[in-house]
Image 1 (cartoon, rainbow, N blue to C red):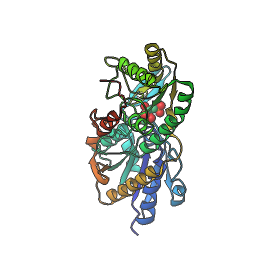
Image 2 (image 1 turned 90 degrees about the vertical axis):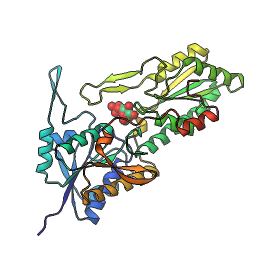
Image 3 (image 1 turned 45 degrees about the vertical axis):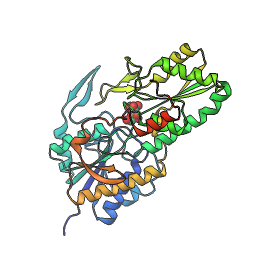
Image 4 (image 1 turned 135 degrees about the vertical axis):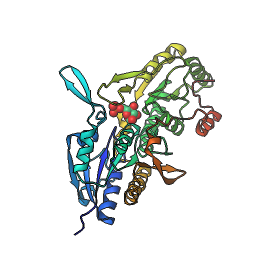
Length: 364
Ligand code: F6P
């Protein structure tokens, strides 16, 4: 009897709403329609190195469409090519890629599906060049992966951040305050731009457009003069002043991407208070943006991407990620994805629209 085709799935990097929806789509199609076997690697590349995995049955992925997080677990630190090992107080880095490749071979799978952001997909590209048949699926709330117009998780994060901005309007108005909402996004301003526009933010600050505190203060004062005695500022965690630096919350040495951003909202709050004399408060949306159930948009997107990934496996289209271009699904070579983050072009049409209705981006 011919043995069944087996595939493995792993989720790497930071979690985001929609991961379970994509695992469900891949596994249901692979098992139900294609008669394949599916293995889930636990905790991303950490589990691949440590050989931690389990078989996924159809029932294991039933009922997870709407749940947040990933049933497989994930890791933001494990990089098989630079694996951190703690020896007392010291950290040592070891190349464990041969172990990872060997473990995949032992599983006798015809493909490893890597669901990840730019970091995890960069590692997937290296594994592919080392002989592992890979199909990539892009995920991240940051929406910053090259080769795709959109990633699942982004719409859910924007929904949560916008809800925060909406709720802050009334308290800002009641107390005649400036409310700053710091959102995630890493070095890309997509979440700030979209939640800022959707929530009617008066000032939106993104990493791609360094801000001038004088311009922000002027905007706030001008609003006050017109009787609008409050302002809402949506700031991306990666935003920085012209000629200044990003605010780093912590360095995670073990991580492939060690810099964790955060805190710009408080720095900016002090700067605005000093420049305007007006009471300013800061709210950090933080990991709330990554939690909870995915929006219908993200569930649909995850289902489309997951089912397409199985088609790619069947066709032997390895070394590619499934991406979205003009709402169609396309194959994107993983080496393109590994080339860095997709940031917001400063002349993006949405920035132009927002400027045309008076939104301030902190520059002239
Ligand atoms: O990449 C997703 C993301 O949530 C970024 O927006 C943020 O900068 C980072 O991860 C936070 O990382 P951690 O999970 O280590 O706090």
